[in-house]
Length: 87
Ligand SMILES: [Zn+2]
Image (cartoon, rainbow, N blue to C red; front, top):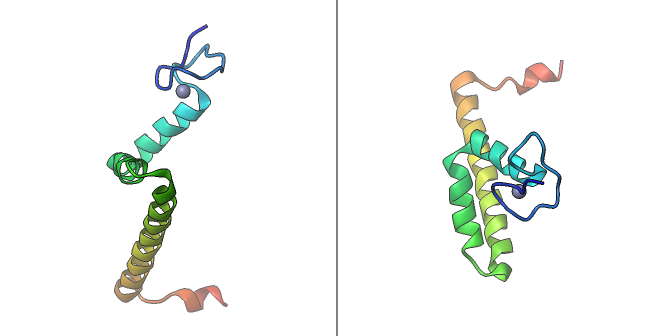
């Protein structure tokens, strides 16, 4: 039985893949977000466990604020089409 090449401790039976289900998910995130995954891991996991929750909340809040800001900018550039959806 092969062990997962990334975590080395999964009890999952691996036949066709080098990675367990959880590690395949991490690989998927890496392919989608590239360096952002490393930034989040560094910024969150390098803290004490009690402070990690605060950092996660802050990161999520920042992401939401950035998306809101992008929506505002897009509305200015492309116009507000929200009225079109109410028809
Ligand atoms: Zn694994």
